[in-house]
Length: 419
Image (cartoon, rainbow, N blue to C red):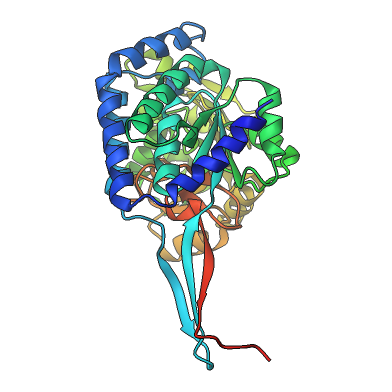
């Protein structure tokens, strides 16, 4: 039973309403310092989690913390502290004919629950953003990161206590199914739940929640190489999108290529077979025409015939599907059919084709001559993100501070009476 934790989080959220922006930023800067000071302890806890996971598991990289990554997390926390407050901003205002003033103002949600898997960095990112946005946070991390999350939350609690703030502003829930169910059904206690993780996790949350949910969807990302694409650019974009980090939701999963560029496919794919570490060379699942273009020109041990299930799959591995199309319209239809509405890209020198692609593709982020790896709140200048929303209500794309606030109307008068 987590009823008490939910009530304490609600009560703690009220304490944030009276904090000044300066006080909030000071706490975040102290947290960044504490993360760096406790780096060795955090890495040791993380090592216990890593020891229970197969290094070949695609989640291993997400789970891994080292001194460099902790320094990066601390830097992100300082970046959040340096961002303008999203609270108490006047979004619009007007004066009615009777002199009544109506002002729309940004305010906290109150209590936000976040469910995530083997991603301990999310623990700090989420707390920092929610704290800056004036909300208490309930964290439901995966059992794979239990030791890491516990140590990180303990660091948060020490900083909160040192500033006279309730530790219930950041609550790490038990690693059991019952806690998830209770949080999803906590109407009146939890204002919003955000799932971060696999399609299975996201579907479970959406199908079982009685409280509002913002989906941060799985990323099935495509790059379309148009007939007018620059080959060198296409090669760099595909390689970066696929190999920069395979475990993240913006990683490339499928190349869609115009038939007129099949002769360039070996050159486009060449960098993906060139990694010094054989384990980081990309296995390609190619349709018949793409297979024929690559046969003998891409390592045979890395080239396979595509099966139907390879299209529309989020690999989270050094694996890539290739689909050949005859026309631009066929490419658009294919992407529209298989997209998860996360990130899609076109590589082309034809400006009209690019503009049509940008207009027709229904995704949170649509790119022209860029890899999908750019889908990231920090890269968009938002600071650390809380996730990439693939839905259309309230928030879409990288969600940062403004997206985890809501608003209310402040109405000011001098005794006007409605007739």
